[in-house]
Image (tube, rainbow, N blue to C red; front, side, top):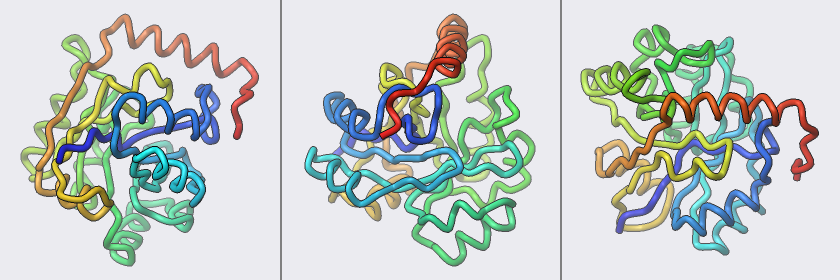
Amino acid sequence: MFLKTNLHFHTSLDEEITNYNIYQGIDYAKEQNFGVLAYTPHRKFLFKQEFSNYAESKGLLLIPGIEINIGKKHIVILNCGKEAENIKSFEDVANYKKKNPNVLILAPHPFVFSPKSLKSSFLENIGLFDAVEMTVFSNGVFNFNKPAEIAAKKHGKPFIATSDTHFLEDINRGYALINVKEKNIEEVFSAIKNGDFQNKMNSMSPIAMIKYIIKSALNTIRPNTFRS
């Protein structure tokens, strides 16, 4: 069976520009026929069993995760625990992965024009990553996905679409249809590593990028009332 999957998802618990909580996010993902969602808060591991139970009650597999910072650069770690908050270097990533072989390390938006992107650090540490993100922040004018796809292909890494969701209306911009026999984390990760998925991408136009930046700025200065 193919599961509609988003491996990069934020909520108001971890992101000030976001105006929906985890339960609202799960509800909306289910409405949009997602079967798998990875909750990847910035810098903090905020996953709770009650979140997983709620998702399961909706027929959705919720994968615990975190989007850590190494300096300002982002790395997504899936199926991790709270100790992943302590990762501060690429060496730490390697050690954590060695001790926790069931995690999946994703390189998010590696070449997007931002200090949060890995850029040269991605290629220097390519062996650490299990998959590379196809980002929604790319288009014909600013094609940040092209170098990421070339690198992924060269090094034999799966290149998988996500929406890096900060606003629910963007959740369908990027996702993968992952082919699994059973709906569990092990099956999902195995399918990703074997390339058994189909990417679906409706990336942002330059105008959509500008609107996203403006919306983010406006939400930053407004009080966030969704911190639950």
